[in-house]
Length: 196
Image 1 (cartoon, one colour):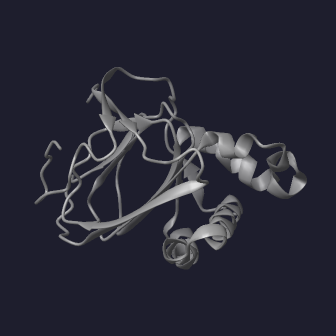
Image 2: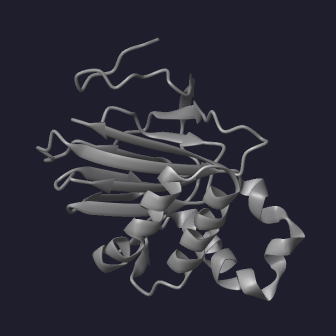
């Protein structure tokens, strides 16, 4: 089992609600890592890839959607048996402090807050649920400003109503960290890692 875990520095500004990365690539090259932000990660065209979240290691299907709300829960997607050269990934990162606002303690946010608590162990959503919310994710990637934030909360609300979801990791204790990676330290270049 891999014990080296890198600490990534997210480029998410304290002034932003979230940051979205969308990329197409031919392989998974980012190492197992943790970061100081929460994350919703969507992957498609990656059947056979290996997903690691805490103590969970699973081979994924054609599409994968995982929510992680624990800044110490290690995670990564690795090539495994994935043979695709057209992997599509959308990553949404957001500050944990976003949900510490008293507004989120209101009844209307109850399902979202319960989902966030469960996601400390990592949550994987089923294929039917991924297909249902995929159009919302695509809308977020095309919107800017206020409307992107509204769609982000709609996405979280829709996910919080899902019954097609399961907890991934039994253990959420931190693991050995060996170095700090500023975001962008690795480039996706021909499927290999490269330093800036």
